[in-house]
Image (cartoon, rainbow, N blue to C red; front, side):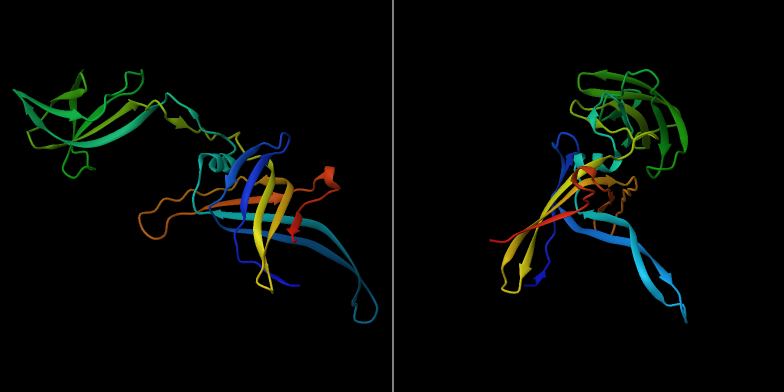
Length: 254
């Protein structure tokens, strides 16, 4: 019986010790396993032909292309996790100057943080990006309204860049990628479908006891074209506990 494969794998990565699920990959576009090795030969005789070959250096690599990413799969790629944060967050907005009595003011959409070390800056602008003149501003918050009284050559209707920091929302999370954070090694379990010549589909299960995620990762942002995809690269390691097993494939035929 022969089979064809035209289905993606649903993948789960598990902790190599506890076997607890760490991340699910269920929006993959492609997943590829590449098997390779090297061969050396004994040669001799007229023409020096190859006579005996020895195979070694078994290598298996895996690539997964995901259409979407979760906090868990991003953590797999980076080697660190998202955690609750109280970090101050940068905010830049372009506002129109208003009159408030004899004062020239702008109204911020958020209240600037009071955390030490984070300053607030104001610039006159004509396009929302150019900084034509640095302005002085006095910030006051009354209830839910934050006003900035501006000082400088400014008129009602002018545009002003406000560059400041705010306190992160309550449910915010942050990830810190440092020079010491790298991806780990996991158990991979995956399921897909193989179809035979009788047009019957059978579940195929893949198990990799030791999958080392490689530290190569690209995060792409673009305003045109197709949405960015997320690529994961890994190397399959030999597992001593299973007799140096690397990949196990189970075809569930009834």
